[in-house]
Image (cartoon, rainbow, N blue to C red; front, top):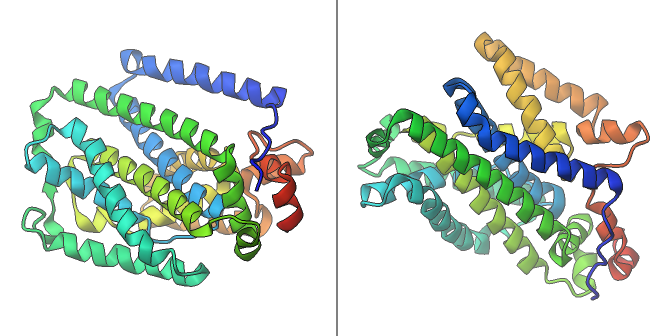
Length: 336
């Protein structure tokens, strides 16, 4: 099979990338002028963007719809707790914990990736619950009581807050570039072919299991890194929260509202979700009901999300990856 031809970026996409670079430079300077509350809020937004991007990488591009990705949020935090308890400094432990979670995901991938569609989704949720229960039995975690990263208290609060913010910002930037490069290469075209028709993709020589495993592992690492950054910001680790199904609900909402299978959709969905939390978060259960109503409204009237709404106005999808699949002569011929 030939490697997909990489088309030059449209002028609009080049402008969008230039704006993103300028925004990144401005965000780097934010801790110098922004309040502590603003820094904390943006750190949480970066975590949301990371988990939305990684869930979209799986479901939107490879067709791996998981409802158990909270397993990697929790494992990223738990591995960090264990490494810090073993003597590792907290900030390196964020990345080392994500690496350990990557190994756990590699082991799990040999089992869950053999399942299809609904079986895969249910298996990921069951595994997340099993892992949560096992972690709760660890004496260090103290059951559902949880524990705290007391080692972070050794740092000045402002220094700690700004360091976590910059690590989260840098992680988001690296994930954006990594995902962009991955999807614009052969692996991106192969994953889209598998999503559309796995049997047809296999018939043209694509190693479907290899591609799915690489996407699954990349998403697991990214989500575990987000889990470690979230724990560093929150300090307290409780299994019911870290492994809570609400993380998968958040991912589903952000990606479906933003635009499943689009590059920029998860980012837009994360920003919208964050805004809704900030505006209606004080309403308790009514806030959750409102989130549900928004999701239902999008499912009924804007099924392709905000990116689809943009396209319905006759405009091209920003930073689209679909043209790469369509430009491959073999995949274009064999894949619906």
